[in-house]
Length: 137
Image 1 (cartoon, rainbow, N blue to C red):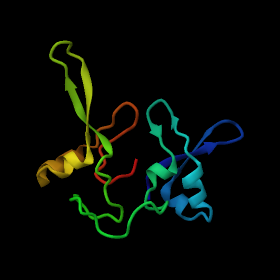
Image 2: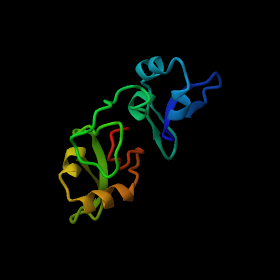
Image 3: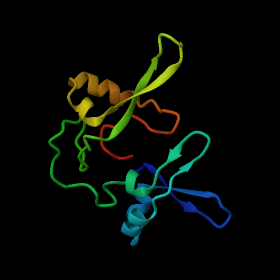
């Protein structure tokens, strides 16, 4: 409910960012979820559209339990092919840190302790992607 998404630019060309709980109260929420597909990046974060961020609010989630393990229950099952930022790894030849990504199905196959540690870290990558066990963004 507290996740933020890019709604649109206002008349002054300022980005309007809202939370999923704001969207949940709107009578036109499904139209917003389906039709607003633009993203907005400020200097620190990439804001994705409601249809990507607010999956449950937009009605994109099944109410049945997920067959994929998760750290905490959710009404929105994970998308096994969703990619998340895992960590930075230093290239031994160049010394440069490169981002490493995995899919949710990779994380789901790990031991419970590794799942908890990975999800707890919530380290952001430069485009705003973050480790998210449930499939929102």
